[in-house]
Length: 212
Image 1 (cartoon, rainbow, N blue to C red):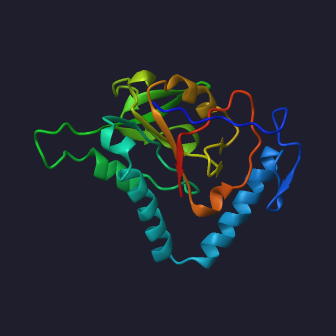
Image 2 (cartoon, rainbow, N blue to C red; image 1 turned 45 degrees about the vertical axis):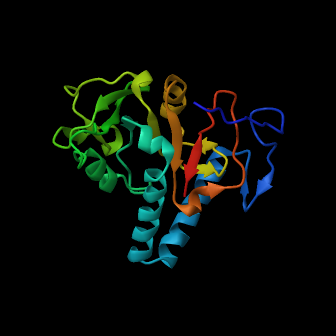
C-alpha cells in the first residue's frame, strides 16, 4: 500500500493553539463545537435535494477509486445522524455483482466491545442497536480479522483534506486504525467537516484519502 508522507511542522501534540477559521486548532473540543455550528448553518442553507446530491457525489468518488475497485473486504460504519449516511451504500454494495464470474464485495461493520471495536461480517438482517444506539452486527455474526480489510471507510467529526481526522473522543478508531495493516484508509465527510488544521497526537494515523 502506498504510504502518505507525514509532515508535522509544529512540535508537540497540538498546533500551538493556532487560530484557524474561527476555532482554536489546538483544542479538540473547540473544533468539535465549531464543526457542529457549521453543520447547523449548512443544513439551514441547503435543501434536502442538495444534501442528497452531495452525499451521492461523495459516494461516487469512493466507488470510482482504484482502492474500491480492487477491494474485496470493505469496512464501513453504521452512520449516526451527523455522519455521512451509509445506508444506501450498505444496500448497494452488499448486492451480488451482475457478473456471476466476479466475486462480490464482503462488507464489515464494527461492534463496540469494551474500549475496542470488534469487526463483524455485515448481514442486513442481523443488526441491532448497540453502543449509543448505533446499529451493530449481532454477536453471532462471523468475526473478521483486521488484516483482512482491504478498504476501510471511517467516520469522524472533522478532517483535513490531506488525511488527518478528529473523532468523537472515545478513541475507538485510534485503537483500530493501526491494526488495519493491509487497508487503504479513507474518510468521508460533508464539506462543512473539512478544516484547515487539526490537533495531531503521536498515535494518530493519517488516512490515505478523504472524500468530501
